[in-house]
Amino acid sequence: MEETSAEQVRNFRLHAHHLDACYGKDDVIAAISACGMQNSPPGAWEAALFNRVPACGAADRDRLLLEERTLMQAWSFRGAPVVFPAADSAAFLSALAAEGDEPWIYTRGIGLALDFLGVGFDELLALLEQVMPQLDGQTVAGKVALDQTLAAWIEPLLPERKRSLWNEPSMYGSPDKQTVGGAAVSFLLRPCSFKGLVVFGAREGASPTFTSYRSWLGRPLVPDPDAARKLVRKFLHCYGPSTPDRLAAWLGCSGAQARRLWKAAADEMEPVTFLGRKTQVLSADRERLLAPQPLERELLLLAAHDPYLDQRDRAVLQPDKTLQRRIWRTVANPGAIVYCGQVVGTWTGTKKGVGLEVKADWWDDAVDERQVRALAEQHAAFRGLGLAGFERV
Image 1: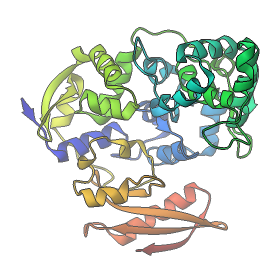
Image 2 (image 1 turned 45 degrees about the horizontal axis):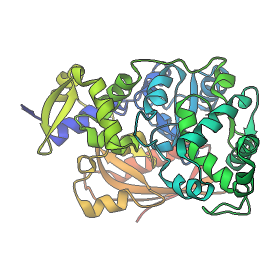
Image 3 (image 1 turned 135 degrees about the vertical axis):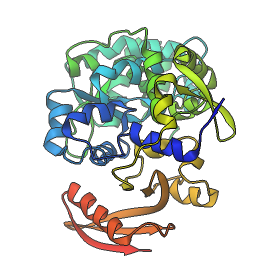
Image 4 (image 1 turned 120 degrees about the vertical axis):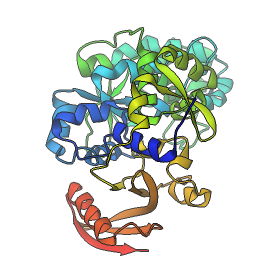
């Protein structure tokens, strides 16, 4: 069995993520399609795209997402908002739907509401699916408003004895803003997203808006028997060599669901040894994996939540576990300074008026401070700001 090194894997993944060079506008869709771009916190996908296709500006992004709607945003893997090409809806939505006894992604916490209401998960999801078509032709501004709007549509369908419970204050926090019904709906929005029933619309100021898939694209989500295969293919191309348990971690799904999805593309894989484990790589990627290519860009300043930083085998990016804790925190991850595919430092940017103050910390002497500062200036310009200050801490 072929043995692969961390250096080979980093080089391969940089290429798969379109981070080995500065790509042009013709490559925008391919860069986003690779594995989607998480948009939490808001703006994360724009920063990720900037690091791959610097020439794609705000007007280009708005045209693709809001006018042409070649791109779209919906709750996807791990229940997070993700921007992806509409043509890839099967991989980023349909493939995530649970089957049989598999739990749905991002719904674990709903048990408190279900027990309080005395209803089953499938029963409540069926009621929500029954009212979701009312979103066709409508736009709802704000997540809380969406939860409560859908909860109000469900209420008449509930037995009368349960309606008062439905309207009790939420037990999940913000009881002044959310009811038990609204909280239950909030958990069920991910399954509805995977079924193509709800997507993000254009932002209204600081608020996201929501509508139906049919309203946004003018057509329903079409079933695709190859959805699972397409999803696993994307995962392995960007994060391979890998294993089903790492697919489960990336998707936020159960091990059972990950193994089922994995089998859908098993005929496209072959084994290699990596980090002491038997892993799988796409057969189509094997040659590129084993033959690293020179990098046109060796130093990168990636924003927090960039898809490249979403690797589940974090030792590939930084083998020192003490340093890993500085890169991936429980809350408020910093950005990452990446050199030849390895995370060698962190950075943060704070807006001050019309400027951006950047603080950076790195632990590799091969990194030139002038280059880090230049990248910080480019990031500030991408955000429409000047670099108000730069400090190595």
